[in-house]
Length: 87
Image 1 (cartoon, rainbow, N blue to C red):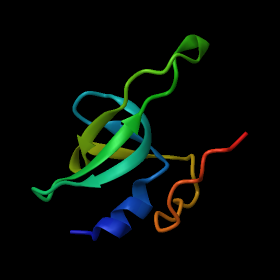
Image 2 (image 1 turned 180 degrees about the horizontal axis):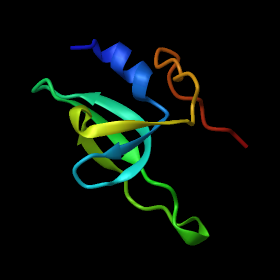
Image 3 (image 1 turned 120 degrees about the horizontal axis):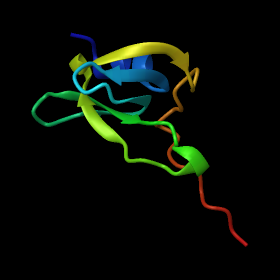
């Protein structure tokens, strides 16, 4: 089994489809659960008028990665979030 870091680097920012439900979108987060399950959060494209629909978590063994790469290199998590702008 791949290490968590290797898997996250491979799938973050990639298009993906859940093989069971057909749910599709872009992998925006990867999680390692206490039970050892590796899951990916898939965010679907916005509907007409830019209406966002909910994201969903899927076990990584259920997803098929597409060729589209939205984010070529994952952001370094060690850096942390960007500060909010001030007035």
